[in-house]
Length: 142
Image 1 (cartoon, helix red, strand yellow):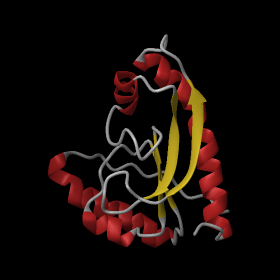
Image 2: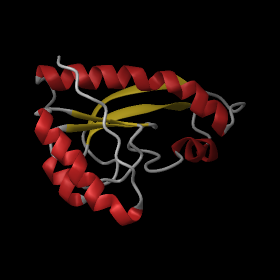
Image 3: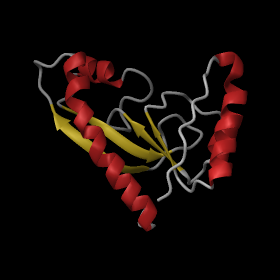
Image 4: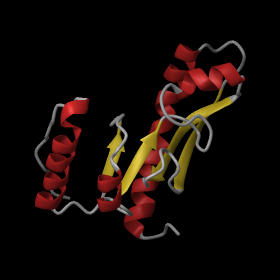
């Protein structure tokens, strides 16, 4: 696997279309076949979602289909769930709704606060990331 240089494009609401155009240009220029959105923390535009259809995996920091969007561990705490984790899924136009590829799970209990859930779930992100990468590259996902 070839290494590509790191790119950073500052983002604010006023320049999001220009930033996404730069991101897409890097994807095209490098010939990237797979994009992993890990800690990206931005909602992609419908246009970029269409361009990345079948080529981009998001690592969401909760167990989908529950707790979509921002602050999922706070949501989990409020609901009193006993399992937290991370989900690797293909992106689509609907926020955190794409097909689920893999999940990592951690057991928690009533003594855990949101900050504890966040700390505990950090390790749960590794498993779905690795599995999603391997499954996608092998062509085994259906």
